Image 1 (tube, one colour):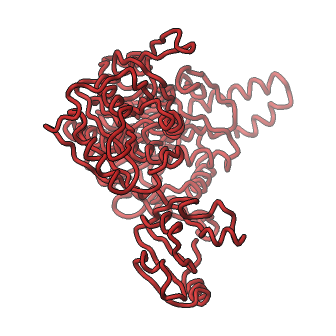
Image 2 (cartoon, rainbow, N blue to C red):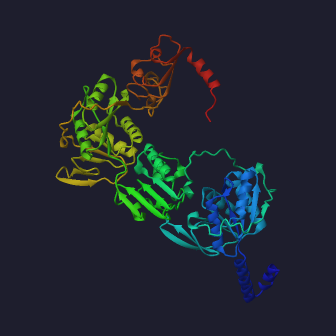
Image 3 (tube, rainbow, N blue to C red):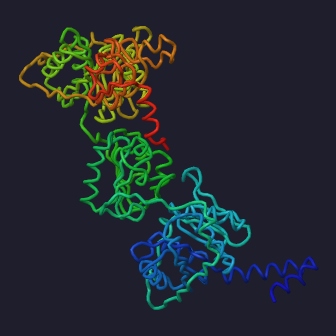
Amino acid sequence: MVAGALRRCSVGGAGFRYGSHFFAQSLRRFASTLVVAEHEGGLVKPSSLSALAAAEAVSKENKISVLLGGSGRALHKAAEHAASSHPLVSEVLVADSDTFARPLAEPWADLLRSVQQKGGYSHVIASSTSFGKNLLPRAAALLDVSPVTDVTSITEERVFVRPIYAGNALCTVRYTGDDPCIMSIRSTSFSPTSDAMSETKVAPITQVDLSFLSEESLKSSWVNLTSQDTERPDLANARVVVTGGRGLKSAENFKLLEQLAEKLGAAVGATRAAVDAGFVPNDLQVGQTGKIVAPELYMAFGVSGAIQHLAGMRDSKVIVAVNKDADAPIFQAADYGLVADLFEASTLVVAEHEGGLVKPSSLSALAAAEAVSKENKISVLLGGSGRALHKAAEHAASSHPLVSEVLVADSDTFARPLAEPWADLLRSVQQKGGYSHVIASSTSFGKNLLPRAAALLDVSPVTDVTSITEERVFVRPIYAGNALCTVRYTGDDPCIMSIRSTSFSPTSDAMSETKVAPITQVDLSFLSEVGATRAAVDAGFVPNDLQVGQTGKIVAPELYMAFGVSGAIQHLAGMRDSKVIVAVNKDADAPIFQAADYGLVADLFEVLEELLKKIPDKK
């Protein structure tokens, strides 16, 4: 009848305006909303209860339908929970199928389209969880409408507020498209009403018609779900969140944060920088591209406060920040702040040696490390091979009372002052040790190495330091030494610096034997390359960048397989540190067998053909 009235009114201009106005008023009066809900353990998730609160904000006279998917007893328990979760819920729709027990957008979007076509809802709402963000855009495309995302406030049925510019501004949006108005909401912005969970009104539960479902037409399939077993609360819904940034320096240090979280009954979060550094998995990321949280208490340790991170936690009730940089943006958002270093200073000194002794210039680097902090924990890194290296390591172990360990990279690769392998070594050692400072003397080797290592670690080096006034404040010459400049380092760890050895004299305590630091072999598994012998290169079989040996590349892979390699001394010098060596040669007296762990005297072509037949292709 209404449609007929609209057709009659459309003939006259004034009549049509009146008719359409009346129809719009009727729609506003009888808004109907479909809430796509998630559940776990037989209960509707808190984020979906927030979506119900958002549906109530659309209209106090809203008719709310709740859509749940899955199978088994957990689904039906969740449906019972949803039926009494809010007084405006008029029905609970249940899609009982294993297909909907998994958060795959493709079948869920088909389900949402089918339910919308039958129900004709004015609004479709879901929380901005990973599932909601994945589902709604696809469903909107199928229904040929534009979604509204990350709504934080609803002022009218079709007028919403959402953040833009990483949360630094709020935008008011009026939706003027066709039904349904599909929107995702920030659950932290909509608290479930006090009427929620009331059992005074229980909505009916209805099974959704799934005749549209065709498993064969689906192009995506579920593989598995990998998650960490933990008794800590869910990050998105926790009352207390303890978050770490790149300032924690390493995955090992994040374990301290986890211990604190366990004592507080809190969830653990992380910044994108910490996730990208590999400290924690990305499901702990808080921010614009991670999870949005608004706990009662948010504690940020070593978090600088990038805009993208602040967008994910600025609605927290109380924010406490700890950072050593007083100018860190996190303090602008914090209710309470503490300017302090999370950890005591720890310095890696890259040392050079000669004749079994640490060079004087490197002893000066140890004095510079002491100037950083009298409570500094100093590690000394030495590279090379043979007796000279081990004698130098013993010298370094007793060279300074603050030296806590000596790290030895025992390989011919590091017996030469080449920046490329040394920079890779320095990156590997830093990633494991999480040092606050890396120091080397401004020798030719130090000047060549440190800029390359700094680039690999994505930090800026400080060069030619002549004085250290604070842990991060240094003096260095400029204008060819005609002036001195005071520099404050405000970058991420490590602070990489070269020092002028003439400006730092070894202390009188140096060379004391009262304290001898332990000597540890560095894990060199990061060194892995394969190639050819010099003879094969000279014969033109392969380019010379594949040459392994004294005049080529030095390698130390987990497995080194040598086919048709005789085992010249120059070649053995480049691969003898390999963990396992397998050799195939038709000459039983070939020197390669002296170095091999496993050897086969055979025609190598027959062996290769047999291997190619039996080893499956790498997928």
